[in-house]
Amino acid sequence: MTNGPTRIPSKGLCIYCGRSGLRLTDEHILPYFIGGQHVIEEASCDDCAKITTKFELDVGRELWGDARIAFNAPSRRKKEKTNLH
Image (cartoon, rainbow, N blue to C red; front, side):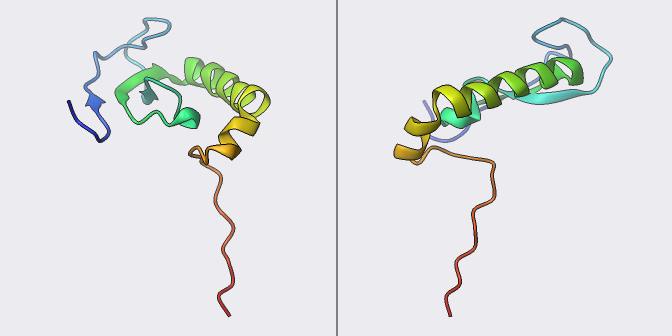
């Protein structure tokens, strides 16, 4: 077992709707907002990615927001730069 991120190769179709022949994006097995590092490569079509992204944003902010802050969970939001002068 590995301690770092795992990347699982694509099967060439969307894991949600089953369509193929479309542009596919990587999909975290566990959401990134709770520390998910493991990814299925090219696993979600753009239409399904929009749905899962909105869901994860809503859940990550509304239900997990305080816990994420308390445990310093990962975020895609850029951190503010501190002025060292």
